[in-house]
Length: 249
Image 1 (cartoon, rainbow, N blue to C red):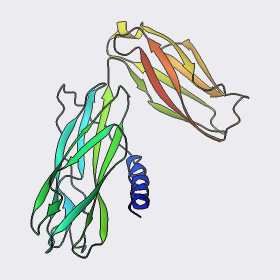
Image 2 (cartoon, rainbow, N blue to C red):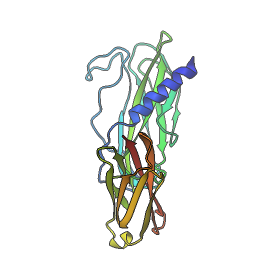
Image 3 (cartoon, rainbow, N blue to C red):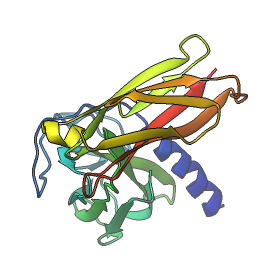
Image 4 (cartoon, rainbow, N blue to C red):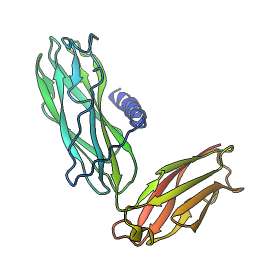
């Protein structure tokens, strides 16, 4: 039974991880989370945000690192806080991606207590805005599984070279899109070599580098597809840039 619940929760967290993202223009070798307004917590007994008595919630539901390096691993922690009148037991950690690691402190939290959850997320060289979610389920005093209550980690990996946009959607009505490689260093743009598609149904035109054009062709039979375009450079550490391509015909 628990395995079925875990599978369902994982699906819910992955869906949460696909929500929108806003990027910040801050760059730091050791990124620090930026404060943002905290949304209403998930509760056992819902009350107003100003009155959390009776609630179990996460101290920071949004943790925003803004712009980070391509190979950075932002890390931090948040607290699960028990403002209910009973002891709860943390059950499972559910993550939206294998790039995220998380570790619970103590699992049993008395009324009025809290426990820390430490986490880290690997940027893994992937460019563009990202959001990863970490969910925690818990057993209330009556043995019922509650949650997950969720923290979201926002960040935008970037390097010497960037691509705009970082992913594209091609449809029957809009079968063509352009991607531009950008850099504050004009010399870096001269090191962009070529671009190619990972799927035969998508044609890539790199004759106008650093601008790349992608287009559906007659070999595209799939109506729904997630693939990518590859852009190759001679910039050290950024020899391979992946651009996500989604087909929705």
